[in-house]
Amino acid sequence: MRFLLFIFISFLIFSCEKDKPLPAAVELDYLTVNLQPFYGVDSLYLDSSYITSEGYKVKFTDIRCFFTNIKNGDSTLNQASLYDFRETGRFLFRSQGNPIDYSSLSTLVGVDSSLNHSDPSAFPNESVLNISNAGTMHWGWNPGYIFISVEGKVDTISSASSTFDKNFTFHVGTDSYLGSKIFSSINWQTLEDHEYYFDLKLNMQTFLNSSNYQIDLSNEFITHSASGQETLTNKAFSNFIESISQ
Image (cartoon, rainbow, N blue to C red; front, side, top):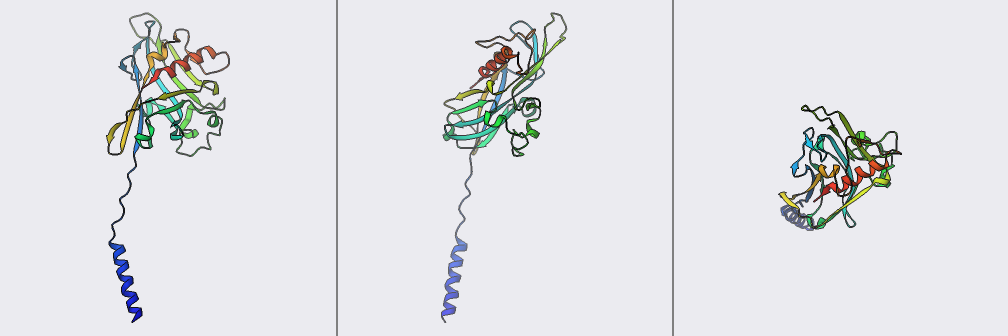
């Protein structure tokens, strides 16, 4: 009799447990940051022609840079992102996070020294710092990453036709040229449920002519951050940092 009673009670308990509704799955919030290039007030497109302050026609063919340690205080939103305008457009990164927790962001423009000299093949496969993802943004001859890469063509010959007689290459790297930016009072925009975004601006007109330095592409058109190239490297570095804004 006791055995039957035990079975009956066990059945009731099992039935009650079975009928309990499962807790609702918690939906996580995701934050996306974009970096939109401009030339002055106009949206910038790769391979399109713009006019410099000297009157030269210029077109950009490559704009890439690393951002690392993207965080608010001690709360990290994203460890490392590679901006590649040709490959991924204005998209910078998408990470899990609540907009309330990230009303401000600080970031390094470049790769933190603790990561810059690590073995690029040792990073996880999904990391942008892994050599398979970083690609040519890692220097083989100089251990470390290219922090900023700006490439293009310029027409310095005054003629009716566009000859684009010079190529320009600005490859900024090494620990001496690690920049930083702070973005405050961020207004995250709703994309859809649990998806938010924030747009940054990159003004390439400022890159050529900032409040501190002017780059004349007729005679200042190449740096690989090597010895003897410090003056132009510093111009490219400072101007690029100033070019980024909210």
